[in-house]
Amino acid sequence: MKPDMFETPVTILTGLGIPTEIPTVTHAYELLMDWPADSYDPARALALKACMAALSGDIEAETARSVFAAFAEKHDLIAPDINGVVAGRNRGSNDPHLR
Image 1 (cartoon, rainbow, N blue to C red):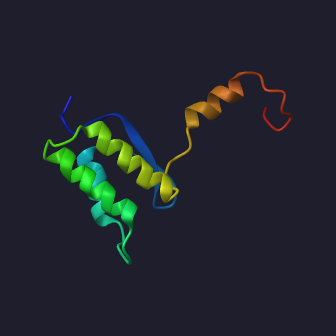
Image 2 (image 1 turned 90 degrees about the vertical axis):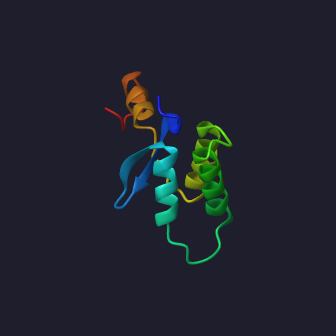
């Protein structure tokens, strides 16, 4: 496994709500650099610092992943867990709206 790989990718919604996996620190860093910076965003600044520290080997990739995931959550970018929805449906729910 590459040193900048996340154990589990962070799945975010991009563009028109398309789920996109962010599997590495490099991908997270690139997304943060492309993020519109109209005004100072402390969450983005912290996530960028964490990614740079991970890329230079100062911190683990998983630490940078946690900070990036917090940034994504703050900006409502985290994609819903589709596997959980499918698993919930397969349990035989009594909800009449789920068939």
